[in-house]
Length: 305
Image (tube, rainbow, N blue to C red; front, side, top):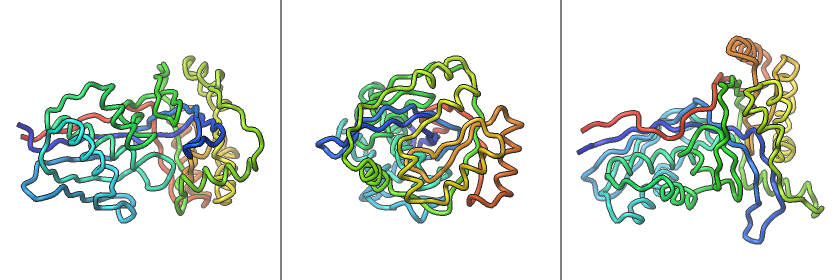
């Protein structure tokens, strides 16, 4: 019997994020193209004799992550236990590498990691479709963190269709000095639209064709994000970051999700390394990282008996 399970789970960027009108339930209909990158958190779940579940967080931005029952990974533990009626108390250890409040779904990744770890630890063996449905109850991005790769998300983003892509893409991430609230970014988008008629969101055929062709030049031209304008309104310094990346020859530049992380598409690994070095020297962001995608979804990295 396993006593602990460690799961590695990736960050995401949105290659497209089309946002429809505000719905009666407070959400927006979305069409988005998720892309998992090889920047990963690790979630370890261990059996415990203590009288309640507990969580500890270390790594990047650990102090900004709740270490109590409000933690999204802890909510995932409780949700799986309630769904299956199985499982004892656990100790959850989250090692953060995905920045917090950065538009890269770090909290959703941790929830997905906890679901997969507990499913393995407790032997609940939920079918993938049931695990994804449970993930959707926790958050719109959690099902994609389970799936990984590249996928079209509809509804709130939880209705997923994988996109075939045989190429590996090289990305440069520019981390901002600060975070952005996703609800505030959406609220600002609604204010910017000022009640104007908003069409239903549509998938970019050019983006999907570029992915299927494995063509980074076409992909760079097809990137798009309706949340970029409100993110720039709330965090004007990101304009300078984006302009610097474009001036340095990136194939495409975009705010990731609700921001404030910006990402840039490079031609290849050598170009990505050059972009990373030059952006780091330009002083237009807090720090820079190089990643590749698509990456695998939440997967077991270690089991200990």
